[in-house]
Amino acid sequence: MKERKFIEQGMKKIQLEQYLKKQLNRAGFTGLDMVKTPLVTRIVLNVARPGLAIGKGGQNIRQITADIENKFDIDNPQIEIQDIKNPTLNARATVDKMTELIERGYSWKSVTFRTIREITEAGAQGVELVLKGKLSGKGGRKRKHRVIQGYMKKVGDQVRLVDTAKASAYPKAGAIGLTLSIIRPDVVFPDKVKISDVLNAKKELVEKAEAEEKGRCEGRQERKACKGRERDWKKRGC
Image (cartoon, rainbow, N blue to C red; front, side):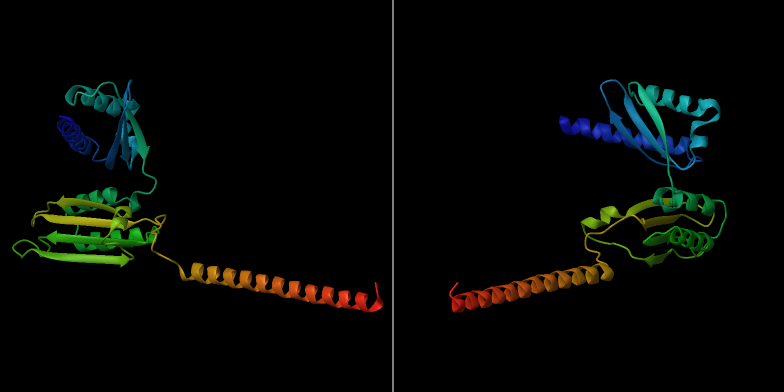
C-alpha cells in the first residue's frame, strides 16, 4: 500500500505543477520544490519574474495559496518565491520563452539562432536544441532540425548534470516539439581534464622529485665529509 501512497503523491505534484504553470505562465514558472513538515507544507516556486508571481499587494499569491489548499487538499501551504538568477541559462525558462515567441508568429529559425547566441554569450559550456515537426510551413512534411554549440554530454550518469527541458509550440502551420539541453558554466564533469592542470601537476611532481634527489645528494656529501673527518682523527690518534 506504500507504493500507492507514493504514486498518489507524485500525481498530486504533477497536477499542482500543471496548475501553477497555467497560473504563472507570464511569471516564467519553471518548477517547484515541496517539503512537508509536521506544521506546514513548504512550497518553493521557481520563477523568472517574481513581481508577476506575487501580484499587486500579494493578491495573486494569496489566491494561489487558497486554491492549493482547497483544490489539492494540502494542509496549511506556505508558498515561497525563489528568483531564477539567470533565466537564459535555465532550460525550462528558455524553452517556454521560445514556445511563446513561435506561437506569436516569429520564425522558428530566428528564434532558434537568437536563443543559441544568447545562451552561448551567457557563458554556457554547451547547448543543444532539437526541433521536430512542421518546420517547412503549412502543407510541408515534418522534419527535424538540430543545432549544437560547445560541449555536450549524451550518455552515462553525468547526463544528470545537463539541464534539459521539453516543450511543444502550436503555430498555425502545425505542432513543433522543442528539446533544449544546457550545460551551465559552473558544472564540472569528473572525466573532463584540462591540459593546463595536467601540465601543472606534472611540473609539481618533477620539482618534488628534484628536491628529493637534491636532498639525497646533500646527505651523501655530508656522510662522505664525516667519514673523511673520522679518518683524519684516527691518523692523528684522537
